[in-house]
Image 1: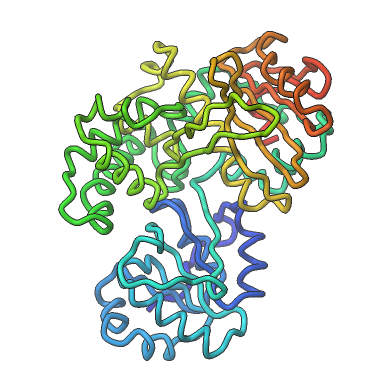
Image 2: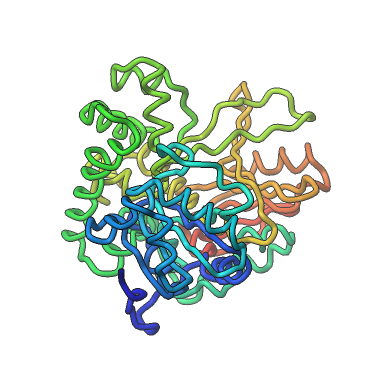
Length: 421
């Protein structure tokens, strides 16, 4: 058993989830911090723990495999149970401990596999509170976690707050560089370009050959690697399984199983289509993302130069990069917006991201790999505004140029750096 991570406070990069985790641990008996492997869960959770148990280490896991209830009783609380999926019986032991005494500040669990699919688990409803954690957004790497969340600023309808980050004069290539870098803390904070490339290649290989096998025995690693590559090619795309089937040469059932596997490892996410009874001709297909842009880069073996030469890849990675900045805000915003995309069946109207707030209020985001967006780039936002009336609170065209300016009633254009301003 370890003492909490000795990371000096001065070197710790505060995460958006920190404040929410503070509240959850102080008020609830057990909290589960879930997200992709190596996104920083252990480092963040250890700051709240008196004891850290790393269950991916055989020496520490042995007692929990033998008698998890007895092992828990010996530890000074709050206890961090890191990588719980390595000893799935730990979850049932936490349940029994919470049933016996539901005082707060007892257990923190971190894991890189969804508890819903691990063997011998139980429903933690009412006992364990689940908090999702993403890889690092730019506002976290740049120490700007105290600035207002973009999703909250949009909800107010006060678009005057949507201004570029102070001192930032980023261009398209700079944003692609940030997307290529990604958000995994170790390679972002501690490695140079060559080191990041090696780290990400190893990460993806380990994910396919080890982590996937935890959830699906006998999986064909070669076909799964091809499937991940197909998802990467179609990143930020609205695609059905048939598109993927042609590339990987697998059947629909296998494709669906592979997709669920990636979701359960927290490296893929499907953004649902937005629906309204007033707009009946909307496409129901989900929009698929790899949750960190560096995974797209690693799977396709790309460089910034490769992406800059390919308009299709360029649009996809900029879209996915913006979604990567928005994703960690959703879990911590008190407004708890839901994220969607919008496309109609005729292809006449398409909006990259739609945020739905309580009361049916809507904010919408278009993402453009251009430095000089025009009213034409905001036409789908204007259409949605006219359809929804007062329900439409804000429209935002994010672009790669330096200026923020109005494009119409309740619609502004702003640099992508607005997301961490």
